[in-house]
Image (cartoon, rainbow, N blue to C red; front, side, top):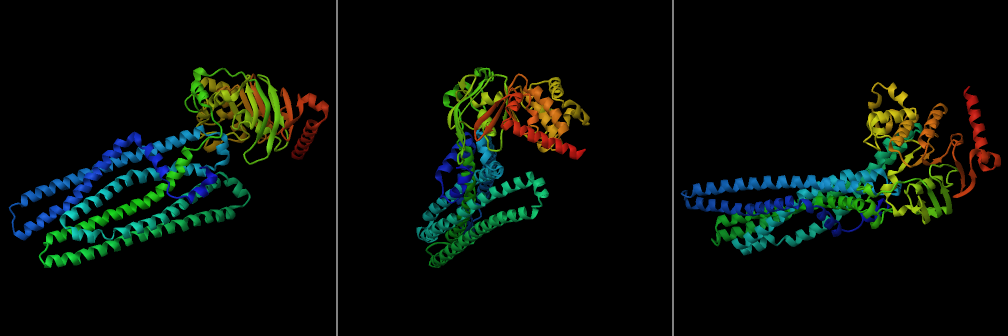
Length: 608
């Protein structure tokens, strides 16, 4: 199940298969669960014996015999201590299950997120993923850890009480349990409606989490376009929908408990009526009637407990469906078993088997189209030599980003092959490729932490002196030292404390430290001013040296030194050559370059 299938999945029936998978995940810490269940079973048995002890006290009081009072007090004290010990045991064990299950769920989900390809993140909202990792995993672990033990206690309590009632007086026992068919029907009726409502709540919660994420990350855009009122109205619709389903779920849960109490009151009244007549006719004594009244109270108490557990399991079902959907997401791009055996998977690398990547790249009859989109590349062929710098030029949709995404194996060709150093890159692992790959975005992402942390991000083993050297090479050292804390300066979330140009230079220093054999620059200078662009351009020349590189160009003045410039139109190479060769041809590149050059000169004259 993915994000787009959630609507259909939300309306599905109770899924036993999901629970089997969840319980399988609990196997490593099943000893905690078993001990907790045993404690709950012993507690249920003791709770059943408890009214019989009180019955014994009533008999002693009727006979006026106090000689056995010390024995009664001793038994009573032992039972109370035992009950306390069992309660303590199952609380401790349930807590252990809760912590370990939450950890296991989040670990497996996070591991899966590391293995899923770029295409997954490209089409799955961040809010949907965050809801799985936070509220769903917490909700599921909380409910399962306590509810399983509560359910064991409640179920065994009802069984033990039923046996005890039949042993004491089978006729009154039949009267007491005669309401069970009604309870079964009511449980089914309410469970079905609560499950539907809770699924709707979880689904809506995902949308709200996504709206939170978009609202926070897009706050600047919202304010500049004055869309606060529109966004609030949209958010209000989402929250009102969740409110409606929450009220409906609370209404059914609220009706369930008083309904059970009402049925329990009827059963108690019937037992008192028929049992009272038996006492008057001296068929049974008062102690037996007391035991039955106590047992009815105890019998319906676990029923209400089970009702609560049932309601909570409806929530858990919704959470289990979604978090298992994430854990079991099948990546669209994966390594074969043979490749994993030799090179390792996306997390556990076998670097000792990794060949050195030199940087020869070839597109061989490559055809590509996105899942539900039109064909972008058709029988595309290209050879790039080791260390060659390739610039990609063309209008939006010409295929520039598709080419670099295919090189990075964020996507794979629909047809044809991509060869790296003469070998199909599918025959080597994703980890091997990405370890040799550097990708600098138009607006580079920096992680919360210091400038030093971000430069060392791809290689934690480098020394501080090597970091400084890399920063100097890309001309980042001077502005870094202008900060009071230098390399220990906090960059803020996403690098918010740095300008776009400063973030770009830090990302280049990070690329140098990573030392990739293939480097992708995706319009790396399009978001900086002219002055900063010159600094960035000098940094680019340093970073590209001796590396196979692909530069997606916005400002054509930044690619004039490229070894080869490819002009793309509709996924085809229409022109190829150096800057000088293409200018001489006076073709499409000449038009693009001269038009952009004139536009820049006009803008410069306006600012003078």
